[in-house]
Image 1 (cartoon, rainbow, N blue to C red):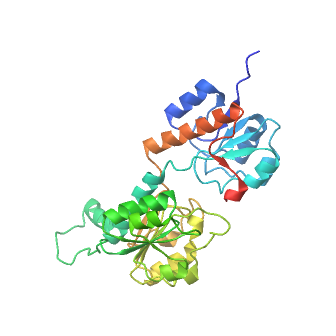
Image 2: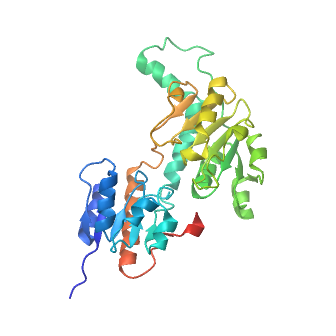
Image 3: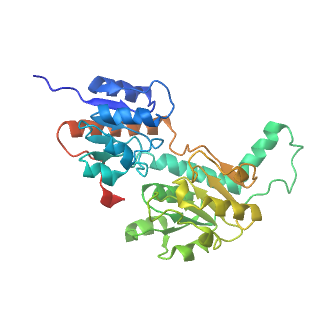
Length: 328
């Protein structure tokens, strides 16, 4: 008797090539529109599926997992971050969780560098003048920004993405500094001429630009709080392409408004798509709609990783990108 095909539920629209391959391999239920599933739809999905493919817009908490059916054995997350999934509860119920690490490192690093340049060179302000028709010609003192060459870049979390940021920033002449839970190998430090700071406070006080590249975990929630933001130089710029919860957003907004921090480039926000209204009209802030990993190539590669994780699990083996609570 042939093996019954896995029942797979996808919570959001994925690239067409990924959806096509899923349809070829599994009994898949695709999302008809590109809106997040309601809570009721998620409950129905975890009850009927062998495999759930959620994204970061889906809250897979303990209450939802408790309502899952006996069939659900794998949550194959489409994305690297899993802070929206209660991994510990899933494992307690015998449900594995996988993710897609390493795919978007270059894409996110490109965006971090773009934000650094956008804030320090005041690119959005210049673009707005041109598009609004308010530019009245070149002037020696108009929209003066600052060079990034020679500036100190402090990377908070020099993993895959942080290292990719360092590579790009080094090519632009920036001096690389970093803070990690664990120090990098000497050969990596030598490659990037990187200075390690065991004390995050000491690093923050000395940097011209801070790039947040660490994941959101219980230990990193508001890691950049009001006290630490006060350590930054008035000329410093902070960039966040990682997770909004790492920064105390209210404290950041207060200090940007008062001029205690020179500027910020944000692609993520503490409360998801609910952006603090006070930050929207600040000329020294660049806001993006969480697009640091939004490339065609990256999204397809993420889908390929999801496919491999599901197929490996279906073949009776450990998914290559298995997430365990000890990793978090």
